[in-house]
Image (cartoon, rainbow, N blue to C red; front, side):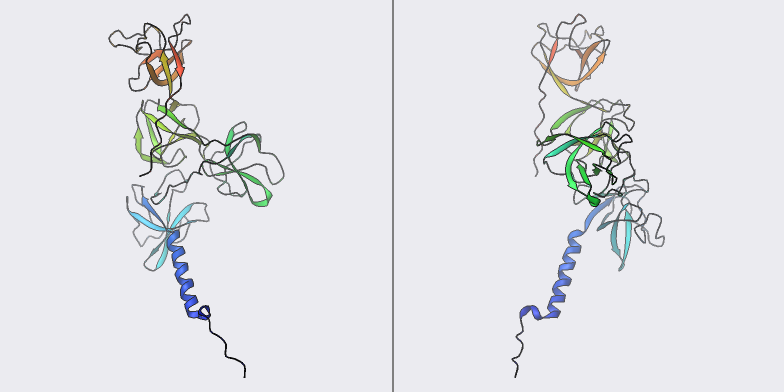
Amino acid sequence: PAPAPVQRENDDTSSDAALAAALQEQEVQASKRKFRVVFQGGVGWRNSPRFDDREASIPGPTYKTEVQGIVQQGSDGLNYVCVYVGGGRLYLPTTTKDRRTLILQELSQPRRRLPAAAPTQKFRVVYPQGVGYRRTAKYSDRMRCRGPQAGDIVEGMLVHGEEGIMFLRTTTGSFVPLSSPQGDKILDAIAVSTDAIRREVWMVVYGGGVAYRNSPEFGDKAGSFAARGQELVGKLYTGYDGVSYLHCDSGMFAPVTTVDRKTVILAPVVSAKVVFRGGVGYRSAADFRAKMGDVQGPAAGTVCRGVVLKAQGLHFLQESGTGYFLPFTTPDGTPIMTKVATMVPPAPQAA
C-alpha cells in the first residue's frame, strides 16, 4: 500500500488563511495615517474619492477633529482619506477642489516628506514653453500649478520613469521630465553637487509680515505667522508653484516672494563688521543724511546682522531687531562696514 502522506505544519490551510488574514490586517493598520481637520468649516463625507460625491445624511468631522484612514488618489487627482464608518467606507478630501486650501493636515508624519540629503544635480529648463511639475515619474501625471519657466534652474535626483523617460525628483518631492516622449529636450544638466542643502538665515522684510505655509505652495497657509524683522532659519527650496520657499527649522514653509515674484517677503541675512575707527551712526531711513542723533550707533569692531538694500547709490544694512539703517560706505566711498561670515544657529536636535 502507498505510504500515508506526511502532514507538515504549513499544510494546515485553515492556519494559512488565518495567518494571511492577520498579515493583511497588519498591512492595513500600518498604512493608516492620522489627520486633523484644519478647515474651520469642517469637512463633509464623500461616498467615493470624488469631491462632488457628497454624503449628506451623515455629519462630517468638525474643525480640529482627528481622523485616521488610508490615503488614496481620486479620479479628480485629489488625495482622499478613506475611513471606515459604520461598517462602510467613506472618504474625506485633504484639500479643496482647486487644491489651494488645506482641509486635513497629517499628524503622524510631515504632509510632504523632503528627501534626505543625497547627491543632487542641477538642471536648466531649456524648453521654450517651460515645463510642468508631475506628481509621479509619469509624463501624463501633470500637476495643476505653474512649473519652472525657460531659463529657471531646478535641482534634484535623477530617477527612471515610465515610457523610458528620465525624471528629476525635485527637493520638494515633485517630478520634472528631462525630455518629452517625442525626444524634445526639456532640461539641460548644469553641475553635480554632493553637498546637502545648507541652512541659511533670512529675515521677514515685508511690511505685513508673512504667514507660514504647511507645504511649499503659496495658498497652503497655516495658522501661525512671522512678523516683519523676525529672523527665520532653514533651507531654501523651489515650490510646486515655482516660488522659492524657506523650509524653516520648525517644519513650516515661508515664501521668499509673492506668486508673481514682484514683491519680496524674505531677504537673506548678512553680517557686517564696523571698520570705521569712529564707529557708525544709525539712520532712520536708507538715507546717509537721516542720522539719528539720539541713538548710539555701533562702535568700531562691532559685528551687526541684517539685510542689505540699496538706495541713492549707497548700500545699507537694515539691522535685525532695531530695524535701523547702517551705511556700508560714505558718499565719497570711504569704507564704514565690511561683510563677514554670517553665523547660522545650530540645527535643533530631535527629542
